Length: 126
Image (cartoon, rainbow, N blue to C red; front, top):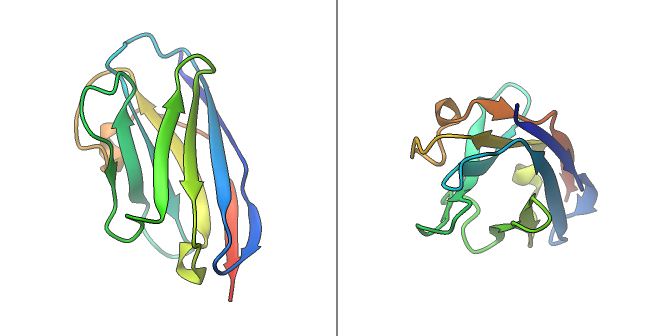
């Protein structure tokens, strides 16, 4: 059973940085995929960034965060990261880590993932 636990959220001013972490366990497939998603109140959950944990394909980032956010993974620590720089008020949302023990592709599609963390709140003030 895949378990995901996010941490690292908080409140920052616009232009600031945060690094989210997602501790993972139970991922058994070396080609599994993982992603970061976010959901603001009243909005649908959207894909932020995704990657295959074996690095067999380039990671992907949503247009809205490309150049500011970077997804990465430490396979020794079994931890997924999202480095967020130059944060903007519109980045305010609950951020979720997700994983699939199968290669489904659609790295930014919520339907591609079967396991989700509990979320961590990011609030950016202007």
